[in-house]
Amino acid sequence: MIITSATIIFVTYYLAYRNPKDFSLAHASALVLLALMATGSGEEARELLRKPYVIGGHMYSNGMRVRDVAAANKNGYLRDNAWMGSSPDDHWVRGELMYRGQCGSCHTLTGYRSLDKLMAGRDRESVGSFLTMLHEYKPDLAYRKFMPPLTGTPEEINALGDYLYSQANPGPATRSSDNRLAAKTSSANTSTH
Ligand code: HEC
Image (cartoon, rainbow, N blue to C red; front, side):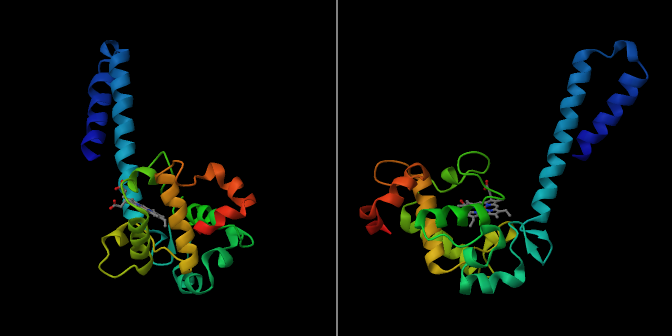
């Protein structure tokens, strides 16, 4: 970042300022590209420095306050979280809300840092053990450097696991968000919960 910034200053001064006539569109474009690189790497460094907190030691990047973690584990993340409204009773909606509330500030399902790729290749059990690890948040857990703890009751974590697993493995055997409505109206499907 420092090297790119220094190059930008150097080029701007010696080429653009001292010899404006020789400064072509190609030079200008290269300079813009360098500027974007400098900003990009700076932003990335800043983002990594701050994780997993948005307010160091007080609030995690997903909005969870450190002092509220225990209550969310005991009473339920979805019940205690003001953003979630009243806790829905549909298993798949609960899974999706858990994802949105606790993972969605840093991950997407299919785009940036997508969970379908990061979860790919894991069976349902392995998704579950990953979530348990993030929930237990042991002091030596390497993910603590950039991920907040997963909060909620075992049932909520299970709903998140089902939801994420179905997103990473779409297909007739699993349910994606597309057929959640069907799941809502068919009681036969609830046997898999
Ligand atoms: C504060 C931001 C943040 C939040 C919130 C967050 N993550 Fe992450 N997560 C990251 C970063 C950064 C990485 C490393 C990304 C990479 O390797 O591309 C990561 C990596 C992962 C990985 C890959 C781990 C590996 O070793 O393969 C998984 C799976 C994952 N996150 C799941 C989750 C789940 C599930 C949640 C919600 C319960 C969540 N994350 C919440 C930032 C976050």
